[in-house]
Amino acid sequence: MKQIHNTITGLELAQIGWVVPDIHAAIAFLSGTLGIAGFPEPEQICAQDLNMTYYGRVVAGEWLTTQTYNGGSFIELVQPLSGQSMFQDYLNRHPEGGTQHLAFRAKVNRFEQITGTLRDQGYAVISEVDHPIARMAFFDTYRTLGVVTEIMGITPEGWTAIQQMQQAGRTPGY
Image (tube, rainbow, N blue to C red):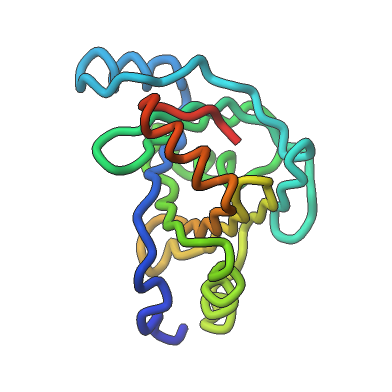
């Protein structure tokens, strides 16, 4: 692997993503024990509905997700339910759960340059999503960082949604 050499300079840490075996237990701990409030009821997400790829193909995969805004970043919880996904892969390797990805964001016009540089450096894409509020690519940086690196290219509509979510202190899953 080539070195990253400032590939993500200027990106903001946007999200910490935990994959957990029991999302309700994780919410109870984070809210009740650590005082991290604002998690909405978990939503069931289907990879096919998002056209989310898994190693280049859209495959059946479902999970529960919720997230809240806390201290400058979003905290996302994901509980895999069925099918194939990077979340299920992580839980298979770590049945107790843990931090699975860190997301960095920039304006959508930088997305291709940033993700192209990471691809050129040999980092494999595990999953991709092209959503109205953001383009997202999840890179396999396990050997380098111990977690997946998500790059988010936020659209103008996405920046508005982020401001609203920050003001509300939470965000629905995507």
